[in-house]
Amino acid sequence: MMRIGGTRWLACLIAVALAGAGAWAQSPAPVVVKLSIHDTIQPITADYLKRGLDEAAGRHAQAVLLSLGTPGGLLTSTREMVATIEASPVPVIVFVEPPGSRAGSAGFFLLESADVAVMAPGTNAGASHPILEGQTMDPVLKQKVENDAAAFLRSYVTVRGRDAAAAEDAVRNSKSYSEAEALKLGLIDAVASDDAMLLHQLDGRTIKRFHGETETLRLTGAQVELVPPSLRERLLTRLTSPDLDVLLLVCGALLIYLEFNVPGTIVPGALGTVLLLLALFGFNMLPVQHTAVLLLIAALALMVLEAKFASHGVLAVAGVVCLVFGLATLVNGPLPEMRVHYAVAAGAGIGFGLITFTLAWIALRARNSKRLTGPEAMVGHVAVAMTPLAPSGQVEVRGEIWAARLASGIAAVPAGTEVKVEGVDGLVLTVGPS
Image (cartoon, rainbow, N blue to C red):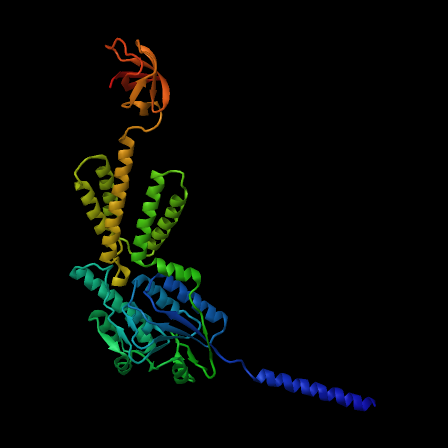
């Protein structure tokens, strides 16, 4: 019996060992972390990329798939993102998709910095000539900026083993390439229509990392896990819209002005402060022109002067013109998407100018108008003598009985006579003939 029991125990141990060995032999499916950038390149985009690569490293992902579609953006953010891709412990695949998308300007720099560069059919990349905040550059400055951007692109394109001359042509001559042209010139590594086709093509491919190490991609049965932008990143990305920032600035300023004119309401002042701070936060992430800020200050000063001095609207018109030009040139980024549109600047500027001037004019008239309450409000009204005024007595005015005395030069007035209130001395009215 003991021998039989021992045999059973041995069989159980063997079964457990075999099951464990089977589980150990069955390795988990590889993970591919997918990021999506389909907007302008700016500081929030750089933060999102860094967070995504950190999460991929924490998950021990086999690769990071960056879905890209962008008209371009800020060169400073582009440099930061390229450095993040180069230092990533996880291989980065940049995929320009879906069909119709582009990796323009700064997007081309990101595409070429990837461990694996892929484009979908019907996409294009390039047109990366640098623009200094939308300004027209003199020949010397233009050459300096071009040389700097070209050298930056060459510094990692050659390491990636891609055609440096064709890549540099996109910077110096604004060349743009279709997916077929980019593949033929050696600017990308593959063309794929979707994620599944892309992973199938890259499965088993050995790639050379930026620092010289080689790594083989194991993508069979890979699970693609999307890491979307966080709520904070989505909100801040919206704040990098110059048009939205201008509207927030104008609405915030109007609400704060309303609070000053109607003190104690609290809500307009609090809401206006929040909107103003959001606008300033957004402008802080964009290239702001200091001359435009001076135009906005001059516009406010001209509107205040128009409210105090009669210039027949000349100062108000000058203030509105300064306001519109100030708003239109306040943000002058390298792309139309990163500048204030003229329609928005004109609408916000003219609207703000008219509303501000109207409120200031109403407030000034109210301050200079005759008081409607208190004893001083009696001046100019017609009163009826309740008693003979010789020279003092009582009068009725606006349904109230007041002590009154005749103005100098008038001897007496019989009861029932209409008189006119000419002044107030404490609680005694000075009256004269009506």
